[in-house]
Amino acid sequence: MTSRIEKLCEERSILLTEQRRIVARVLSESSDHPSVKELYSRAAAIDASLSIATVYRTLRLFEEAGILERHAFDGRESRYEEASTDHHDHLIDIDTGVVVEFQNEEIENLQEEIATRLGFELVGHRLELYGRKIK
Amino acid sequence: MTSRIEKLCEERSILLTEQRRIVARVLSESSDHPSVKELYSRAAAIDASLSIATVYRTLRLFEEAGILERHAFDGRESRYEEASTDHHDHLIDIDTGVVVEFQNEEIENLQEEIATRLGFELVGHRLELYGRKIK
DNA sequence: CAGTGAATGATAATCATTCGCAAGTAAAAA
DNA sequence: TTTTTACTTGCGAATGATTATCATTCACTG
Image 1 (tube, each protein chain N blue to C red):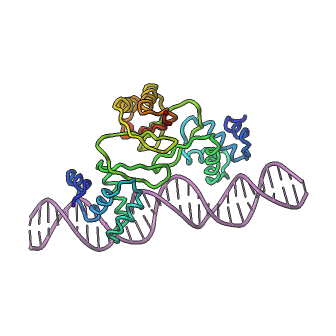
Image 2 (image 1 turned 90 degrees about the vertical axis):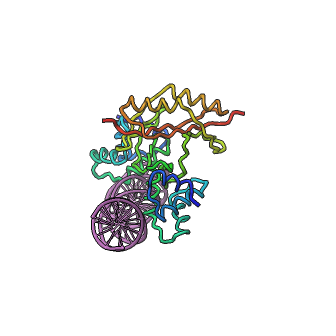
Image 3 (image 1 turned 135 degrees about the vertical axis):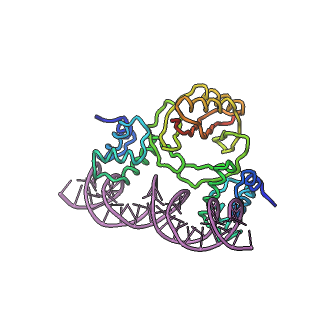
């Protein structure tokens, strides 16, 4: 089977090598926001000879092609997710770096309202919450 | 003279060593958002024996005391600015890069609510709006 | 099937930041 | 004032994420 990412690569005439396919599939099968190390270990489980340098290179390639979104929080490892059209924001666990997605219509509306009030047309935004898990 | 940061340190009974005073003054005299390296070289101009480790330690100390705000973008060096008591977010004009500050109580509350709902204690957040001036 | 440019793997290098530790300093206790 | 105790500092080594280097291998064109 061909993953969605592989299809997008073809559209962009990005050469699909075996290692890029592996990274693409690992990404497609991940519903979370995997870190580079996580991606690497998942990919290495498929092909042990795969180098972490190649994972980094491939992720950057995909990101620059607009296929992936990178989330670089503070000094932590980058995490990746497939770039999607539907909008959501992120809550980052400051202890573990784990990312939780959320959506909130009300906040979206308020942002629109604020921009308008300031005389701007809202084009985009970035909202990140930083929190600590309550035990 | 005693800088505002030094006063805040006294209020919080933070021991003011000579090196901390130097960092405090360099910060107070900077109206931009200096990076650690910039701060270090400005401070080292005053006392050449000052160590960059101490600068890092001092910045972290001040940050944890709520005296400074740290801005860490991507993999770049952190930049610092004096924390203002009034919280604000930023709207960035995508055509000119001009930054407009704004405050919105309602959004702050919603953020708190969302974090709680997801099982987190909200520690911080970052909200940036990107807009285009309406003519 | 050879030629050429891109991709890979292994590892060294880099960059920001933190750590460990011995030595110094300040504040509290005696 | 001495002694004690805790905190700070400077230095260099260590860390962790990421990028660069470089020899080797691969993929496609002619």
